[in-house]
Length: 287
Image (cartoon, one colour):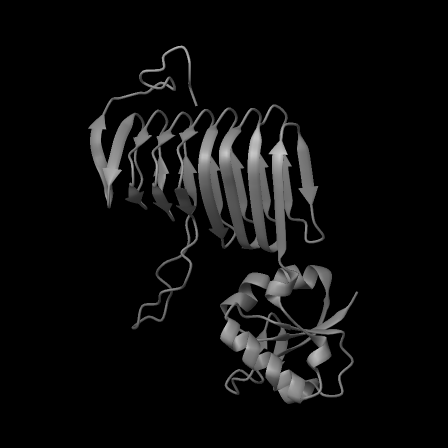
């Protein structure tokens, strides 16, 4: 197992520590902020970057997603004679891409990230970006796509699940903080749909200093029709048989058999249902 030093303590550290611990022997943690020196993070004291000199380590992994800071730290370590050991967390992320999938398949990487596609599916294109470990994408039987699915998992233990018989034109999903996005059976998704389970960046209350925007799961029940350009945000849920209108934006919860639309989305009609047949193409085309 390679010995590494982690450079940088912050939100990215919290997201990726366990992933790195799974694969590497973490010898030390360093940061340029001297207020962090001597404090323990996951039981390891934070030290000055100067402590890296003379240490027997194989890699120094920079834990930030910001290009500016990556470049500054890389230059700093090069000046210390450690440039040949430097990698950023971006360098060890996993990008997976498949086209024209018509049979069951599975993928697993060294960090136990997994894609499972069950039999009977017709997947035109799927891309997955894993920034962590033990994340799972499960596509159940007979799912069909016309354009593409893009899945991004940040951190650990995230799950994306698409139910049996669902059809999709174009979909982007982003999940973080051990969250989940679940799309039920027999749903119908148009194109340019975005599902953002992650809150993306932390927001804190100034008085309590507590975070106030924790990411929440997104759940779409079975037989839900989602219109083009809909954006479903962290905490969104909707019951079975419902309809989400064109361009709807929401992080709220809704019940069964309702139509919602708008920004923010609200209920327009209740006690409704829908069928797959396209108007004007009865007996000829359905998604």
